[in-house]
Length: 278
Image (cartoon, rainbow, N blue to C red; front, side, top):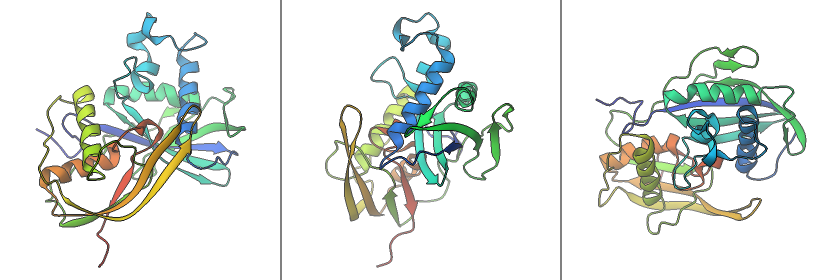
């Protein structure tokens, strides 16, 4: 039996992390935030100067490879960024992860980010985590020195309603995809299928011959210089109609799970909106 908080064995949990940070950042900030957060987690759980996870005797019990960086290159990590917002001297960074079993590891991570003596910096300026809140209610969920105030609950991924006749899908971060044809479905189906195989019930997701009819409203090519390469993606604005019921369920789940590649740094995030008036 499935619920609206579950998609083919996947359960998603999320938080909004509220940082005190003077650094403004430039352009796409996902890689910088994921790097900062990964370094904080690594320093808090590992005594080695650099990761040596593949040969570490504590591999099976360590939060760093389990949550952040799987040992196998083909494995998708059960953690990704979900948007960020800068206001004056604060940043709010959304995070998502799979599985209630990982809540303990996330708690370790938050403690590392909230450590005043950790010496973390963002864009050359000091940064620290002040608290974490629930995405839907903004209720405080975690504070430094206190820990969990309330435990995260699985987020809503689907609903029991029939698919909308039409809707608008607007990407808020670049979609990184090698698929051709329909801008969204191939990238969405591939991402969700890999997650279900690695972290869910292993089932084969439906692939309808016509998931929907797609009309491109706007597109913007994004090229983001990273440390060792250039990230190329597209921010799409799409109108979907004649939406298949199975495709609608995947579309709904994907608004939290993302689509395409480079999702760890926040790529492939979109929102489902009412259709654009003619």
